[in-house]
Amino acid sequence: MNNTLQSMQNNWQPIAPLVSVPYTEAEYQARLALLNDLIDEVGENEQHPLASLLDIVGMVVSDYEQTHYPIPISTPQNILAYLMAEHQLKQSDLPEIGSQGVVSEILRGKRQLNTRQIQILSKRFSVSVDVFF
Image (cartoon, rainbow, N blue to C red; front, side, top):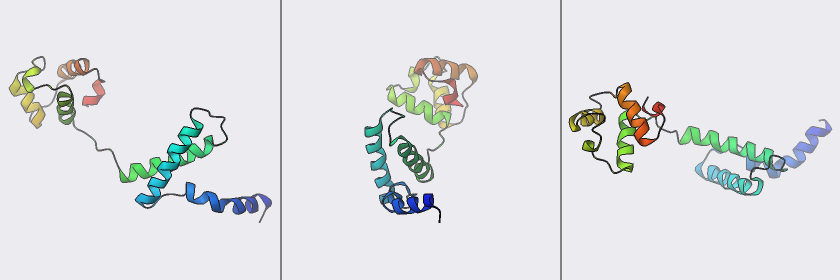
C-alpha cells in the first residue's frame, strides 16, 4: 500500500460515518444535522478548510432526499387551486379567465388552461408562465 492510501486509511475511520451514504432515517438525520452545522461554520466562504466537506455532505443529503422525498409533479389545476387558496380567492374572483363555471371546470380538470389564461394568471400571481405547463 502506498503512503497516500496508508494515510487515508489511518484517517478514514473517524470521517467515514460523517460522509457515508445514509440508509436509514436516523443516518439521514445525522448527515442533515452535520450539513446544517457545516453551513453555519462555512457560510459562503469557499476558501474555508471545510468547504469541500460541505459540498460532499450536501450531495449525500441531496441524493437521499431525492430518493426518499421526491417532489411530486403538480398539475396546472393543483397549482391554480394552491394559488387561489394562498390569496384567499373564490372561483368567482377570477373573471379574467372565465366565469365561475369555467374556473370550476379548470380546477376539476375538465378544461385545460389556454395560453391567454396562463398569461393572465402568471401576471396576477407574479409567477412564471412555466408554472402552469
